[in-house]
Length: 215
Ligand code: PRP
Image (tube, rainbow, N blue to C red):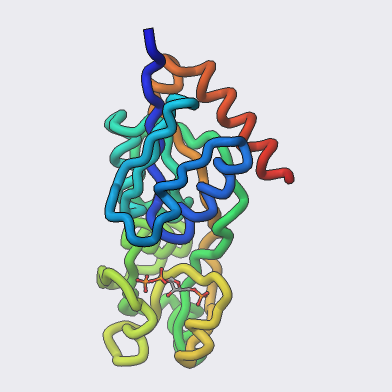
């Protein structure tokens, strides 16, 4: 009987690239995936009985919770925001950045005095948890889908809650970090049923990845 394929959901973009570098180190290579012109979404490695697909970050926890993927690689920001039922098994240590409250220096006073301000973000759950539960500050949340830094510049909101990696987007737009919400990095997540049914294979894969990341 041939082995059931393990399915891994990768986050499209920078994290997928880093994830594949890690899988390459443990001997799982997928030539097709490196073809920049390919529109294929799923890639199989018969030898290892494993297949990979690329999805948008917020969809990765969904695929994993429903078992359409046994394993997922996704940013901790997305794990917090999506709040799906899954096991988080490993901090991969790449994709390091921070979730921060940012804005012009002049917005600092609104945070110090817990004023009712508008907060624009792609991460409403993280922002709500932070302001309501951690800071006890009532805010008006505005959900955006990208280029969040625009919001305080054009007067949509006083501050934003967003990811800061190098800080250059903030600098180039006259904004700064006002408060840090939490550190972020890529995590490996596993479907709860797969963790039982495929325990041996998944444990081996996790151990191999851990070794590869040390190199
Ligand atoms: C992310 C984030 C910031 C930027 C931070 O945006 O939302 O805008 O990267 O990186 P930096 O500190 O190195 O400048 P992303 O490029 O993912 O696009 P988005 O605007 O669509 O969210």
